Image (cartoon, rainbow, N blue to C red):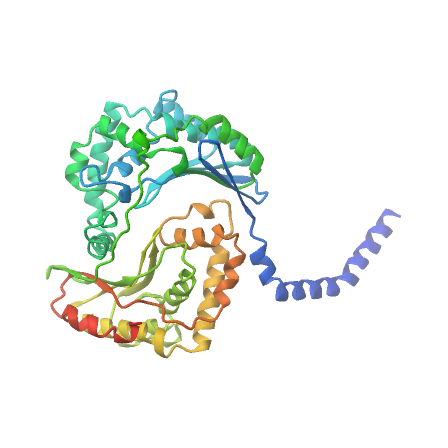
Length: 466
């Protein structure tokens, strides 16, 4: 009887299978918008001291939890530039209640991952762990942020580590190019400073100065405790109240630091080095803040320009027109379009690597594609870029640690998640206005004797003026 029931059940499944598959096909055809709207809601609660608690509940068995602090190189001056980065290096070197070995052992015993990073506007400390370990994770992060021991031995040891890291940084020409880009595009403003700071500051910063930096910048209204994954918002809020309520919200003489606007200046830097085999060139225009609705148009524009590497296959079948031209004419080793956004401004541009004799041709092709964004881009090309962008962003939104991505992805995810994810549909809106501004900046390094004059480069941007 049992065997008969089993066979009958199998027959029922076989009979129902075509209808089930048909249902799945229909669902996949119509549920794209529902998928976008299905991104977990971001719940935000503000504690009495001003600290914000943000949570996205997705029911996953893991969670990523982090503390975001509005403290980066933009908040520094010439004398303390690099302090935020130095403190990031010291974050996991022990606290007043957890020596470094004990802290590392505790994290490893949980099977968790702990990390940190510093940017021009933010410092972040975050952990990924099992969701059941959320209370312990929040407690550890609170201890690290509020009670870092900053021992003299640790300070001296990390000083040497950072100096070695700075030497390694100098060998990464792309990173060097982007630091020079900021130094020139935002010259005379805090955004021109590097995250690592000058070598002299690293050599001379003291423990007392680092403590002063913490007491001045690590304030509750400038902090966000954020979590994504298998977390409950109410539980996270209660844990925040337990471990972060003691974070100060008061400033001396009520002197709350306010970021001054960072002026964009069109200009250039040329660092010629004929011993280098290839030239690294970045050209950019002023973009918008990541809270500006125009960021969607610029994201589509950046997708249209695309990226390329000589190792790619495809040739004339590559989706990006600039990539097709680069492959067919062999004018560069690689290029990438970029969109870097901050709280009040940004940079939209192109970084490419090529040899000396192809510089002018590559620049000509790149500027031609920029002009096409405003003059001759077709609806089919824009629609393709929109779909590619949506696919990329939906992929990034998957997973508990997607809110903690760094660099380029961070700004776009910040923009989309801040609006609940559903505004991905804004990408599908028609883009009728010009996408970039007249002002322009360039940084160039390597064998660049074939590079046109700056004014000639600028004059080729005439279609981009409005």
